[in-house]
Every structure is written in C-alpha cells, then in structure tokens.
Image 1 (cartoon, rainbow over the protein chains, first blue to last red):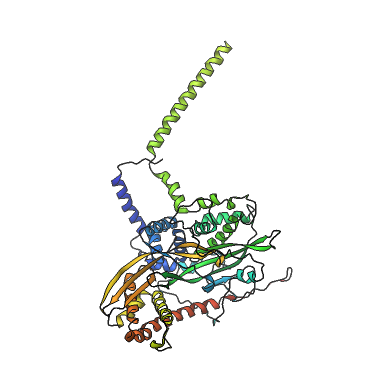
Image 2: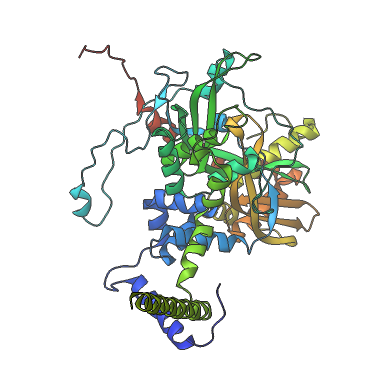
Length: 372
Length: 159
C-alpha cells in the first residue's frame, strides 16, 4: 500500500527541469517538430493512438515528443488528455468494405476480386540497415514512385466471398438497438461479451497481444489460423448529428483490418465451416491487427464449443492484463515511497527472526541436556 | 457536388444530400485550404450559436466487418454553429481540434443555404476542394495499383 509522503518538492521540481533539458537533448541539433514526428514516424503514431485509444495524429506526435519516445508513456498522456474532453456521441459503424485501400493481401487466395496490393510494407524486404538514410543530405530526395492506372473495382472482403458459399461462419447479426459495451463508461467486468473483448483488445498492448497470439501458434490453444485478409487504408467516419437530423461525415481515419480464418467447426445441427477471428486497429499496425484477430478467435472457445486449456483462451486473464496503461501504473507505482508499509514488514521480520533464534537456542539447549 | 437540377426543383432530400456532401467536403479539407477559400469570400456578419467546441466521438466497428457493432476507440472532433444576419444557420463537424476551421466551415455552410449564394459557394469553394480531394485520392489509388501482385503457385520440386 502506498501511504502519502510530504516533502521532496524542491528535488521533484529540479528533476522535472532536468528531464525537460534531457528531453531536448543537444540544443545545437534542431528540435523535432510535430510534423516531422507525425509524418515520419507513422508506426509510432499509430501505436500511441491505438493504445491511447484516441485518434489524433498531432496529439500523438506531441505525446511522443513529450515522452521522449516512450510509447507507453505517450499512450498514457493520450488517455489522460481524453478525459478533459466532452463526449459528443458514437459514430456509425465504419464500413471497411468501402475503404480507400492502400494495402490488401490474402494468404489464402491468390486471385481474389480487386486483386492483392502490397502498398507500403516491410514484408519482402531484407532486414539490412540502410546506411543511405544515415548519409542523407538535408533536403528532400525525389522519390520516383511508380503509378498504374487504377480501375474502379470494388474490393469485397475475403470473408464475404467465402461466406457466399456457406464455407465461412457468418458474422453474428446483432440487434442494432442493443447496448454496445463501452470500457470508457463502465469498468471491465466478467463475463465479458465479444463487443467488450474487441474494444479491450483494440486498445491493448501490442507486445502482450503478440505474445498471446504467438503462444496459440506454438500449441497453447491451437486455432490453426490463416491470414484470410489484411487490409489497410482510409475509412470515413459518419456521425448522426441530432440537431441537424442527418448524418455528417467527420473525415477519414486510417485503420488496419485483419480477418483470420480458422479451423472448422460443425455439430450435429450445422455443417462444418471455417471460423473467424477479427482484428481492427487505428493506423497501420498489422502485427497487432493479426494478434488481435488470433486472440479474439481464441477467446471465442466457449461459443464455439471448444475446450479451455490455454492462457490465450482465459478471458479474465487476457482482458485484465492487456491494458498497458493500467499495467504500467501498477508495476511502476512500486517506485513510489512505501516507507510505512515497509516499516511494518521490517518490524514483522525482526520479530520472526527473534522468535526463530530463540527457538533454535532452546532446541540446542535441549539437545545438550539430553547428551549430558 | 454541383447541382444539376435548378435549385427550385430540389426536394428536401436532395438538399440534405447536397448539404451532407458540402459538410463532408469541408471536413475533409485541410484547415489551410478552408482558410484560403474563406478569405476569397467577403465574410458576412454572423453570430455564434454554438461556440467552436472540441470533443470526442467514439468510433465503432463491426465484429468481422459486418456483424454487431463494437467500440474501437475515440477521435477528436470540433464542431460549431453560426447564424448569419439574414437568419441562415450553418454547422460544421470535423475531425481534429481546429476551431478556426470549424467556424469558417460553419459560415460557408450558412452561406450555401442562402439561395443567392449557393451556386457561388458550390463552384468557387466546394467543387474545387472536392476536386483537390479527388485528385489526392486518385494519386493514392494509382500508387497503390502499381504494387498489385500476382503470385504463382509452384508445384513442389519444380523450380
């Protein structure tokens, strides 16, 4: 338990000043601008927006700058900032089929309507440091990017294609008027339905979800996943404005969507079909979208009549430990003064040791007497 | 974006659809682009009905893409409502935290509702902003298209 302490104001003030100086670094080197961070560290921005659960690139850039590149600290700043703003309401669900696709791949279908586009990706690249980036002169190099005439073809989701044949489990047709759980309104409680689970995973720690997803591949609750489709691009956000009486488009955000296709399920009543896990995250964060989809699928064990045997299937374990803001708060609070607590423990250990020595002494005396 | 029908032939639904398109175009434009267009108008007198305000909208997705909704995460949104001297009320909603853009967009929306100004707003502001967005979209599509891939499946032992 943490007991309040007094004092230390001057040291704390000075430590903050020192942090500010260290954060800025060598002043003979130009300071980072928010435009540079937002424009050139897109994956950091995406991670901070996702785990901070707030999409705003400029704010994420500011958070990263202030946090000296500590992305969990930056996500924490985003979460803290959002509490200062009023909530206008909920958007209409985004339609990822209407995405302005910048990348779309499928590991299950070679030829799918709309085709596969690699877009910006580290896939198929050699992981060799590119020293030309280190040697880059000031000023913009010209990037001659190839273009090709784009046809007006739609890109249906892979899972919709297979769904037509009945081979793919259909999405649960929900009651549109049903209450959608919201972790920013009600704290996590169990049992947690899939809406709550997906929100929790969408803002969960990338590393934690990656490790859980990896564990399912290594045999801890196998789900036999295939990356049915991963798509990344821009989707419009629509919001019904009550006072206007119609929906307005607020603009667009970038998201990554992952459809994991998993092994069959069937019963006496239903024919075997592929089952699915779903991932949707802010920005281009494929590793997390894939992990989210795999963990989502694992957490569906009960609904799909599977046995629970692995950590990734344990809803309470997964959802209670996925949030890195909560986790960091609890782990890092150990740094704060625990003097009173520790004093009590110290007294206890002293007493236990005194008793232990006393007991040993008595035992020694007894054995000596017996020997005599 | 430009209305093909004469204004007097428009149904209320047409007008709502055009206004939605106008608001979407302004929302999608950068604050700089909106400011540049706004300055070409001779800005009218207006009252603030609702001061520009930044808040949050919780974005929803659907399970599996088409299933029940779930909450994905929030976005920052800035909104504003103005009223012109002549009585028209204009609104703006846009992602981000730019209050100046919200006010300017709301004034443009209000002016568009004046029959005398509608065509000018459409042609001088909305259609050029929309064209600029369409051009950016086309660039993304063409750059993306150049990365279209065709994988060939090899038979094992055949290389």
